[in-house]
Length: 159
Image 1 (cartoon, rainbow, N blue to C red):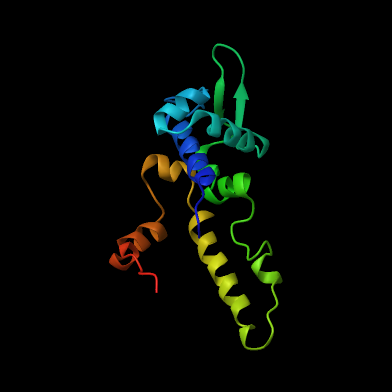
Image 2: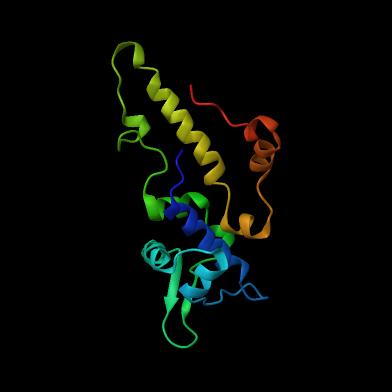
């Protein structure tokens, strides 16, 4: 899976918003330039991403002196998969086609099942990890278990 800058920046912006929530858990409006500065992101690029997140209903915006962006719902109800879908579309496609719709001829026929399994594994992590999990440093057991495996950290050479 290739994680684009748009996805990385979108997740980081939402995590920053979640981390800045008020003591009583109420969302706080944060200007785009402050979000960009906090996460060392290019503000112009971030503004476009924030517009996508607003259209998807993940954040809201407020104009004025107390203006900025805030989470549209609690961070524990926003999965990383939703963020990805908001800025990039479906999580797993092959040549723009959902894996379950693929058909391969002959000996390549089982490849569809491989792509469906890849999508299922991505969903297992991304649908069950929330912005609040990341902001609070409390990742789901599945993520912690995967990261604890030394093999997860080992790069694979290109051959």
